[in-house]
Length: 234
Length: 186
Image 1: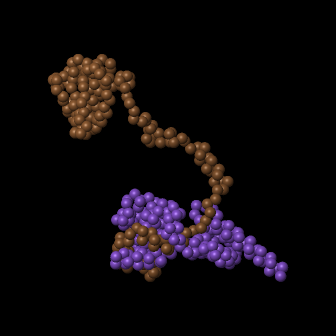
Image 2: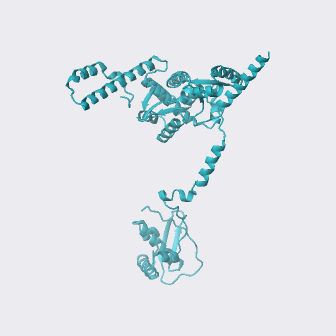
Image 3: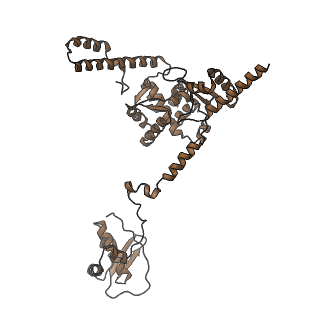
């Protein structure tokens, strides 16, 4: 009852006391009597709540809860805050800096761990920003070995030769629409073939289509840069 | 004649002292308890407070007394506060958000309608019908911290001492009821 806003008059105090009175002769042990007195204490708390309830209800602050809920729902936020401001008398006071406050601030600042260290335990280090990873770095990271890379490059060239067979093939279809990691790996290798002139690329700006084709003889001429986003979507 | 002058000088000194005591924040909460006032100003501190309240009136201020839980003089808290409420634009320029004030107004009205004590969860449910969840949680915590609301160890919310000190609750309830009628007519 105390931990809720339920109506304290819902409890029939008279009946409960009558019950306790009837049972009192039956209690023989100390534990039983203690529980009995605890029940009595709880009942007095409810009587106290009833007293408060009556006092509040008799005051002009009492308004039916349902009515107030309805009224608050009806009011726009601006009107609610305006009602508050019109009944508000803010306290006037000065916040001053005392020598003790200054000392506390100094000690706090002196002992404050740098922000880069503060959340290390919780979130780890901040890592590095996105950037470019070149072939040498991938080899040093162990993503590729030099031999693997060369053989993967040759395999992809062979596959493209087979699939294109002198015709343009859809770039996105070729790199695949399955696993994102595989897609990025194939696009990365294809970029090498294109840079080396072992494959060619054609774009159609209006339709957004990108075509590629493998060549047997290395292509010559000025190379152009094309940025192609590789997303995780299929 | 000389005695009159000395009395007047003493009174002026005490009034000045009372103003300094009230305006400088000592602990976490503003205001000074009755027993502290007695210590600083002597037994007749209420008279001095009355004089001070008249003196600060031209500046739009007053000394206000909030009765303590046991109703004794010692437990009363005295504060220097605005005699008249500020305008909405004045309140806005002090950096307070309209949404935050709306949450507080709704909470005070709801708690008062429920005999002055409501479970926090019930208040949250009531407010979430009108305000986003994050604002409800943030505002309730903030107002508990600042003394406008009180939360006991059973997570029941009560009206805090600061609301009793700063807010004319009857006016607030009346305004909410009358404004809601106007809003309904529109």
